[in-house]
Image (tube, rainbow, N blue to C red; front, side):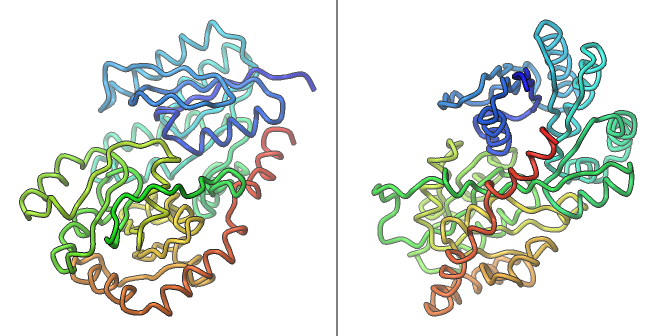
Length: 366
């Protein structure tokens, strides 16, 4: 089969969106020409095997952001040779669908979350209804689709009769970073959160929990996001500047170095809205691959994995004292702690990107 020119639309920064990178790399390995069109929110320049285009957008919030990206993607794509379009999430589907109609090419849809039930749309019914109408209008017309968790797949199958394949965002076993010899915080026990600083992820509560822990514990937030100014203000208010560290936005391989050196990981997503309830956070699998015991509130999909594999612990709520008690318990029970790490090493091969590419094969080449 001759090479196809595949254009991939995503509103994130390509260099921090590992799922999009992995899908694109898979397609390149299969002999396709791939161009990812995203936006520029960092100066990262990574060596990748595919072409990239990053828009520096004027607007970065509200409907103007989505409008600007979709217009720029559409007109950019008009003047390129395209055989297939990949739409990542509902916020790119409008432009992808219109471009596909003009170019007479198929659209494959990758849903990273249950978009219309996301936390950002909770309590904003007018905005949510707009997204729902867009979903109802364009999603049934995609050629093929896949998503990140089984509940999201089942919802979309039920609503639209589309066979949504399951492609979970697991780390690559063969390309997962390896530990370096650099030590960030010698003689400290690091509590780590990695990822985006969004609401309902237990970040404020974990900062407050530091006050209940001995001085040997640090809370390191490896990432970025809308809550960063509020989180830093909270740290100042509590006088915890020496015990709560913000690394800033990092390339994935650098971020994982903090994961390797941490004592415990935080995955405290609250089930606010069905998008969070149905989610399988990427960080959970990074923690498993880095042999880092983690604490979770036990959203349904994460609970299934913990119950089956015993790779983390579930707490009853995200009150600061509860979080602190769980961390102290792990610190004092070395047998339990080491058992979790051993379990993670034993099962990590079951949660690898290499397994998920078998499904991608059927989506793109079936």
